[in-house]
Image 1 (tube, helix red, strand yellow):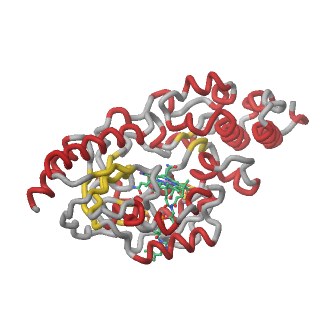
Image 2 (cartoon, protein in one colour; image 1 turned 135 degrees about the horizontal axis):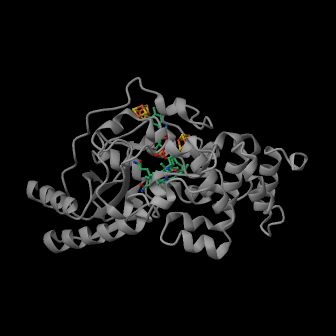
Image 3 (tube, protein in one colour; image 1 turned 30 degrees about the vertical axis):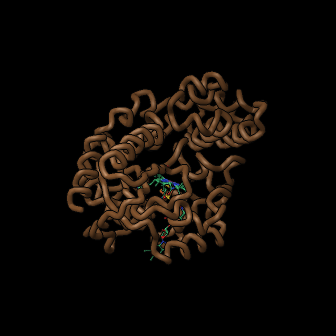
Length: 347
Ligand code: B12
Ligand code: SF4
Ligand code: SF4
């Protein structure tokens, strides 16, 4: 058994993963009740897919009854820069760290497949990779496998990688000894709760996704709720505030996956340039990036929020050009931005 654990761990690290753990293919009953409470409160907003078969999401055994063990994997994307720096530059857009280069799913998937092949060829049984897209609750799974704990911001915090781990997992029919629970925890810290610009945490360990800027800029399709717009600042794709202030990040070293290192042109892109993107320009600029998934309309809507919050009248023409945009959500966002910058009276 020790050989099994050690071989899989060594192989995973050699493939480029930064954290590895093992857990039984089952989750504690409170995970199901907490997911049910989140859904009952409507805190998932438009993410209807989260509410499809929540029993299955909270019970890995329903997903694959033969699975005995989950191998939980983490890939560090700890930044080598201050992720909140661009927030102080109102004519620029702030893109969250995870989206400043390639889509991590593609990198994770390739590595998980290699690890699955290794496990089956070396130890037999069967193994299936999962990452994000499958209905698996990856944070409680990773916590149970010893990768860390769910912090008050709800994400997994690792003693060695702070808040900056992408998660993925392999289910296997092999029986593997689970990892001991890690030391560490949030204690009396509440920095992440206090920093959230939209007050998205109704209580520690609980997120109302409908208020989270990550949800508003990435998942939400229609107009952004009026009362939250001013609080978004220049965050145009995701948000890192609650992750970035976590004191456990001081132990994190910049991640070793080159394709996850930030692209220089996405560090502080000029809002005026982004507002001018048409469909083809958007696709070309974000080819291979997770940002491409939301499409030009939603992205430019976000850029309009940032322009509206910039207090920079020089950006008014960039918004005014979109007042008659064929996408009504973009046109409305542009009108809001123009209004915030003084409207027509100031022309
Ligand atoms: C839906 C989703 C979102 C939604 C909702 C987030 C959320 N917290 O639920 C939105 C769009 C807002 C989002 C945002 C982000 N996401 Co996201 N998201 C997911 C996804 C697909 C599902 C998460 C889920 O199941 N939510 C449902 C809720 C109910 O589950 P939960 O958060 O585990 O809830 C637990 C706590 O609330 C806790 N709890 C509740 N009450 C209580 C009470 C007590 C006392 C205690 C102790 C605990 C507790 O128990 C619940 C059950 O475990 C996962 C991938 C996956 N398949 O798991 C990625 C995932 C969670 N996201 C991820 C990332 C990176 C982000 C962002 C940082 C991206 C960004 N920079 O913009 C932000 C972070 C925002 C935040 N503070 O959470 C990573 C997190 C990695 C990590 N280290 O944890 C994941 C795992 C993707 C991945 N494969 O790496 N995301
Ligand atoms: S990602 Fe940003 S908006 Fe969402 S909970 Fe964290 S700090 Fe709040
Ligand atoms: S900032 Fe503090 S409370 Fe939030 S996750 Fe990190 S240690 Fe926990």
